[in-house]
Length: 397
Image (cartoon, rainbow, N blue to C red; front, top):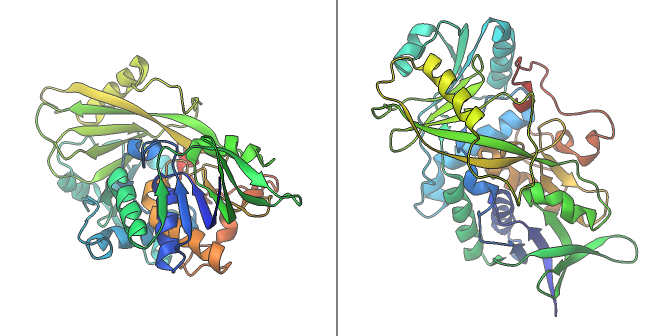
């Protein structure tokens, strides 16, 4: 059984659904999204949901800033759905060895029109009482940053895309990409039988992208990196505080809606790579011990702390920890993968960028250069890296 479509998007997670929504907003409704399980059931549902613009590469910072504008207007854009976005703020704290990089990155963000301020210890102590601050030398504060819910956001993209005519199929795995005699990708073969022929195939399948791309002879250098998150009850509800990116202790802290803390790792110097289909869904004991030790230093006044849970996701990482967004070396195939932990906050911009490039070849996103995300940059030995990286956490910046 053979079907046809203008666009086939492989991957019903946050990025694939954002792309479908953006295409539909341009009147491109002959779109089919294929998800092998249920929508947002992969790594989208394991996102920590942090929203920040603090990056060292202008294109990524600008994409995050665009994302903030969409999240802030979500009720208007998504029929009253606010996407659970909470503008609790976002702070980066650095030690003395990273002050120069912090100032340079803040200056870059100011040049893009991003609202971010340098604040002192007194202001930080007011924003988050009880934090040990002596090892920090400087802070940058984004009052418009905060937390959202990736699963909620992805489902809102799906609902809005469906309302405009996009077809979304769950429990529909793709077995392989199809190519014509000239090597152009012209559709997909479904695992359950049948084919869908299309002018454009978009691979937005996160860590599962390399396996599918290989069926068209395209090598995609993306690996699944283990990301462990730990939930901690301080013994009292955490007050309303901003997200903290602690680049001195190399961790990040987020207040959960129930008052617990979600603690993640910012030290990526010894990554663990995993099979995205087969991995333990709980943090290992050594990670939990290290998390507890670091948190006890950062929040010494916790009255009765205890670990309440943990979970594991997989970043789909590239060699430079930045995404691949653009045409693949096989005609007809477009890649949106390798988001390396940045995907939630930039998802609205990803949708816009991909829809722009597929329909017109250029983008209207301000301060975003599509050349930065090209597939060929690794072979060209021209990775996308920050001019002002942070010691110890440069890979994720």
